[in-house]
Amino acid sequence: MIDFIISKYNYWIYIVLMMIGFYAMIGKKNLIKKIIGMNIFQTAIILFYISIGCKRGGTLPILENVHGHAEHVIQASAYVNPLPHVLMLTAIVVMVATLGVALAIAIMIYREHHTLEEDEILKDIT
Image 1 (cartoon, rainbow, N blue to C red):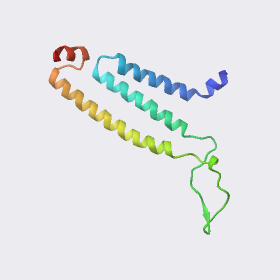
Image 2 (spheres, rainbow, N blue to C red):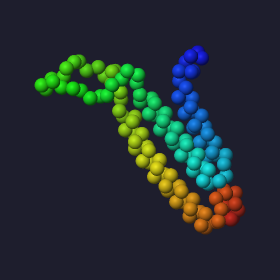
Image 3 (cartoon, helix red, strand yellow):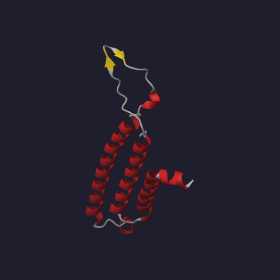
Image 4 (cartoon, rainbow, N blue to C red):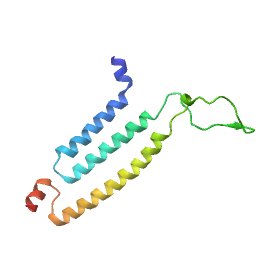
């Protein structure tokens, strides 16, 4: 049992990163700390999906042809699925865009309320 847990150490690291990011989003009152927590959470999810897309002993899904004929019978289990990696490239673009919009909104909030503390902003609004 302990060998199984140790062999999956990367998943435990992703869980810890997710919980750190989740705590920062929920527990912190500063908006910049919340944004950093969101970024850590998103990064952990991306790393998780990339790690489940890997396969030991797997090869690239590229077939070599000799004179128009495949060299051997295709076995799908021998190839790495590229779909999770491609989807995570899209997720990285979305993550960077989300970070940029969140920081721009934080700047606008700071200019309006002269603080980034959630409690003070809520007092200023009411």
